[in-house]
Image (tube, rainbow, N blue to C red; front, side):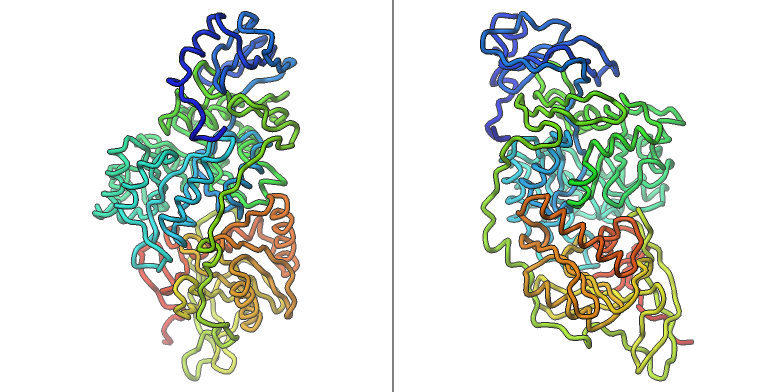
Length: 600
């Protein structure tokens, strides 16, 4: 049953009422479980749940009056019955999977609702790409709600994207059946400065009665933050410390705290609840970005909830943050997020609330997973050629394209260098003295070269700079057509010829991620859809991801989930320093700065 065909409460209200009253039989009864009520924060033993046409009709100590001769009985056997988990903010493309394969990967982990922002594909294919993601999302056996991307480009004037999203695009999308709101408003300076396009997008969303997503990636909690909140965003996931979470909640925003493949922002923010004792209703758990290796090997929202509990959060509060809080925020409290009458029958059976083993997953009244195995089909959209041919480079590149020329006569230079920060999205703006050989600046020590290769309009443009923190050694290069958010091609390496090999490999493939060392390809992930996603099974993509991560380690990198750091080096809306197709960007001031400091 797809999202579009799933009955609303109004469609089946008489059935719900008649089953609850005992005048008609339920389709299914879950018997003898511990009812985790996220409205009252209680765990109530010896309860039954009666389900009709995919929705909950009755919850109580005895549902025998709802039982008929054909009613299916699922024995809970004293296990906890918890609501299906909700991811409040995430990007399917970051899993390197299509919505269908992402759904297949997370269903066994108990995720039954996702609030997704497909702004990655929006940068490559525009509104048409968003519609493709939206349409495949509606085909799935779980709830995938789509937020219309707000910022493509994320920072106008700082980068060039394949397509641009307009206020008219936003207004059009608000009428689509699966659109739940506006995706994260990354152009936070634009909102704070009352940019007319940003305000028009927000106004179109609010006129439709839908939620405006936020993204305030600045440590400044003064007037600029106040202006951003006044501009309409209702949530934010870019906090990294307790003060960020507190400020957002005090101003009436939902503080979304994330655990992704490389973002570990829960431990430093959940203390607002666990130690300061603030009201947890305005805190939401999310993943933001998880690659396929994390999904297959470690989990999804179940991993996030476990982590919150390990950080000292009461299990029932952690569950609220991954269920009812999320549903309420998006105006869906009467439809999802709890085990109560009228809601979709999205239910998990688990034997322990702290370790949270996901033993049985029920979505829309159907058993969709048992003990880690997905039991349902996740239909695929027919992705057209236009979505599969998106790497537009004018020519093959050579080592000469990946050089930084030094000032004449210089033996060494001072370079502005992007500093990677482990497990966090922000970078540091650093300076290093680098050697010069035959007029070219050389990578040295922990400093590697980074290049942004334009891949949307075949301009042939290559921007070169430097990055530190990966720890690469030997002659190597890593290239990726996943480069948030503009999604040109990022190449990081220690040798110009290896960088050219890696870039040309992805040009020939039409998108993906590759690592070369000494002329040999160590790992490859083929991403034919928009250069961002594969429609292969998640386990296959995860295996290739594992090989990629091992290849990064073999080249000297010891960072946790360093691929995510690589993919964000072009994200020109998160401080401090980033690279774009137009140059090196200081995100603190939204100004271009030189790669090499002027000689004194």
